[in-house]
Length: 324
Figure 1 (tube, one colour):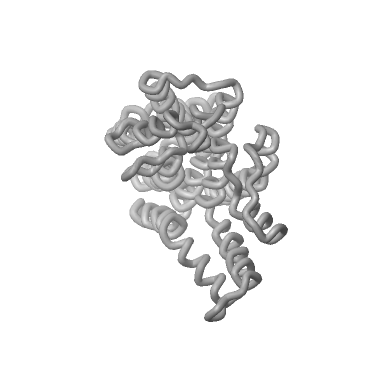
Figure 2 (cartoon, helix red, strand yellow):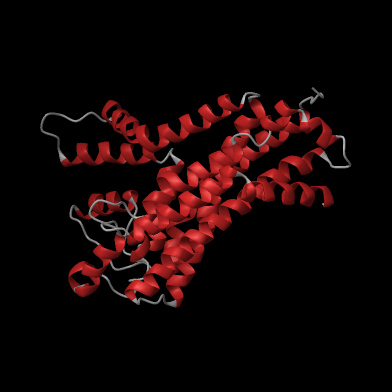
């Protein structure tokens, strides 16, 4: 345990004192402020919605709209978290966690100390997760402070609970990207190789997965020139299933359900259409119902994260490390 905490504190200090960590923090702060308070950010749009809450459906969850409302030219805060901030931070923190130590020769000297080998990889992973948690805490507090100061909208108890749950699942989401980057850092000795592999997977899930899902659906359930309702529903159902291979899609749905209680997953919308033939939207979900809806998403992300770290752990524990 002592060796684990030694590695953890050392890595945590490196994350917060290195230029890389400082730049990441500045980026997170600027994006949080600009997405919320920018000239075309969420604040301006939310002011209009609060002026006519009945028309826009802004009710007792008005505070949460700070995180889900997008501006005219600026995506919402949750969009930045899902697509860019958390994945990039997780990848940057983990892409050279192991191979940089091997290349510089410090890994063999570190393992020569009275520190168990598993304490090294566990400490590095834990330090990355804590760094992601601190960055997310800072970003959420900034957006909340802006909402309180500019709009004067205070959160209720359920809104605070939903924000805390969103904070927790965002950390889990960041741990996935950290575990993915550390996996390549263990397997590839060149830092560039682990960086390209991690960023390539992120780019595919972020930009090309939707196109791949559409292509898969068109192959498995092709549409005729005048598609029937059954053909459209079948095609759309395959698109939903295929797109959920992406952790970005899974986290995006889970985060939206938590922060926008009136929203529904794509699968639920398809079930409503299939059952009634018309779009029927019930009222906002309670917190318990929201958790029941998103638990498969969270279980999937958590299981993949555990599997990635387990593979990295086994490979690191078994490989031979020589002094250079």
